[in-house]
Each structure stands twice: as C-alpha cells, then as structure tokens.
Length: 222
Ligand code: NI
Image (cartoon, rainbow, N blue to C red; front, side):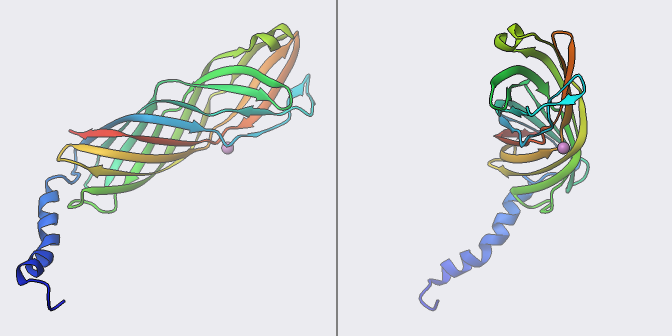
C-alpha cells in the first residue's frame, strides 16, 4: 500500500463519505410514493385435488400454466423504513389442463396484493432491498371450457375467489434522484374450488395454485 499515491489514498478514504452524501437526497422518506411498471409473471406451483363428479372422486387432476402480463406496483412510505405496497396487473390468462387429457379450460384472474414492506437500509442508501408480508385477494373471471370439452358436455365453470397470505422480497436501485430499477418476487397462497357441470352432473375440484410471482421493471419516486 506504500506505493499508492497520497491523493488516491485520500480519495479512497473520502469516497464512502462522498457517496453517502450524494445519495442522501435519493433515499426514501416518509410520504414518498414509488410507482413501478414492468413485466410480471405468475408461475403456479399448483397442487390439485381429485376431480369429483356427482360427489365421487375420479383419478383426474388439473394443472395450471404460467402467464406474463404488465405489472404495476406502488409503495407509499409510512416512514423511512416502512412502506405500504400494492401489486396490480393487467388480467392474467391461464390454461387449465386435465392430466393425461389435455387443455380443458381458460380462465382469467386479478390478484391484487397488499403488503407491509420493510426497507432495512433506511435513508442514505441508493440500494433499497425490502421484504414484505400481507394479503392477496384473487378474483377469477371469464372462465370458459375449450371447445373440445364443451362439445363433451362440460359447461357452467366458475372458480371461487381466494383470500390468502402473501410474502414478498424485492430491491429498488436508484439510478437518479427519481428513477429506480426494480426486481421483486412474491409468494401468494391462492386456493380455489372450481365448480362445473358435465351435462347435468355437478363436478368440482379443489386446487391450491400458490404461485410465485416475478416482476422486473422501472419506477419513479414522487
Ligand atoms: Ni395454498
């Protein structure tokens, strides 16, 4: 280290202080609102019950594929370390498969998720990792059987709405005083029961969808 020029040593010693000073203006403070937009993917980790027809269990189970949409998230800072977070998106569209048979139906859903977020680094950091916990509400709509199963007599599909726990982890990095890049992941406990008919025979199946939700995007701090 003896060969490091004195001015460089001074700069190295001063750098953390200068860095801290330069990012203080960028840090999150009470009342700040951060809005982010990006690509959001819902990746179901589904666990299906047996399809029941007229109350009798069959060997059939269902699967749910993943889907990507436009995601919108917001954080309202309650203090410099605590925020209220909301996840919203354009409607997700999933295909439901019947194991061993093929594509059965298509559904849409919206999974708004409200979390209390903790930003441990507080003021003075351009990097803002956070964790959150809260509630997910998922509402299903546009539930339709594919034409094949419809021809087979499947009709009248509806899925129960779901309330469940949601966990979240993410990171914002402030590129400027206002512009952030963001990556985030959620786990949401989404359980539903699908009710339908085959001809006049009532059928149902319980499914734990329990997806991971991933988002990358850009944000703006107001
Ligand atoms: Ni579940």
